[in-house]
Image (cartoon, rainbow, N blue to C red):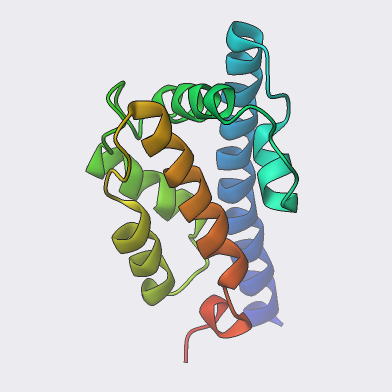
Length: 140
């Protein structure tokens, strides 16, 4: 019974950290929407595979969100320690190899402009997360 209580407590703590990180993302997305306008709900649209419309505007939105989160500078370059912290907060219940895939695959600038780099970063993160298998969430 004590083990079950401890397990439930740990799940609530992990869930709270993930929820907190998602709330930060949503907050910064809303701030950037106020500042830039379109596209609205970009992160949700990307996660659903929906069309974002004007990719230049989407790139500006992605750059705004990522700089507000502190994980990317205005030139589209990742800030490694802040990015790692973000990945750790998003993936606290994932085993190390999933984190490594995110950090290695998404942790470097890919693009010739800051906006292009920001869009490629968001694409990378949304591509890596859906590929998480059930075994990524358990220790073997």
